[in-house]
Amino acid sequence: MDGDITTGSESAVLELDGAVGEGGGQILRSALTLAMVTGRPFRIRCIRANRPKPGLMRQHLVAVQAAAGICGATVDGAALGSQELAFRPGPVTGGDYRFAIGSAGSCTLVLQTVLPALLTASQPSTLRLVGGTHNPMAPPVQFLQRAWLPRLAEMGARIDLRLERFGFYPAGGGIVEAHVAPCARLEPRTWTTRGERRGGRAEAFVAGVPERVARRELECVGQAMNWSADQLQACVLPAEQGPGNALVLTLDYEHVSEVFTAFGEKAVSSEQVARQAVQRARQYQASQAAFAEYLADQLMLPLALAGGGGFTMDEVSMHARTNAGVIELFLPVRLRFDRVDGVDRCTVEAR
Image (cartoon, rainbow, N blue to C red; front, side):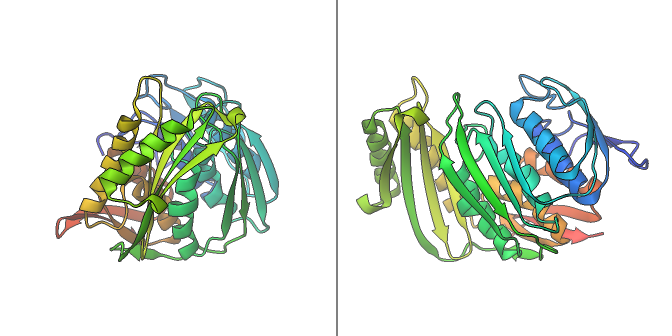
């Protein structure tokens, strides 16, 4: 990763530079998770410096507020647009928590920030979030349910995630609820192959949008992926949950499931939406990797908390390398990227 994400790392408070590497919100989210788990305070400057609108947006602010509430942290700089933040965590406490993002800001990114920390609590937790569930800039709830959480379950985590109401951009209003059981320790795991193909399916969700949009997207997916009608499902949601349209492709294998999503927008045809999802799914299918880019990014931190493990991946993104840099500051692990037999690999090892 170009640049140094920290200055003064020998001091008790980690000083983070949010502009290095990918320069997005993942630096903040990973720092919040790791601070909660390790008890290490941090200060971050230049939050989301490489984004068109730098600083804390609603979903980032709610992630800070949720993290602070869960561990009794003291926080300076928690305000919309803030580009600096100081976070001093206390002990993680389980219980019932409710947070509203107040926009279409991503519920899933907030969940991924706090769920690993809630696993370390001594009692069960329930977390209810209101906001965006299907947002072009974040993984949809189905990704967490089908791809991310099953891999955490293999590491020993017991988390049940329910989608109660869809929330599309820009209105939001979606509702998700997570139930988290305490987990004394995550177990290391390694995924090198995806295993045999078990099946695939496409779902086109529409709310306040004509059903023919969903049907046309599915027709295009069916032709491109050579899928039969029983693998294609149009899901018409109540109009008040929209307007919105999300196309979700799920590929199931022996050892992993992957989820690829595209979103309908004004002036974007159904064919274009289908093409986006299919292109990403085909890129993954053409590789020999266990994980696609996003799942790889989002399992690095849990594996680091477990103290070891690894996976093969279809792409090593700058997002992943930046995330690895944050993780290594908080935990006594090293995340190594290399390429073996034409496949990219990430290995997490103690140091």
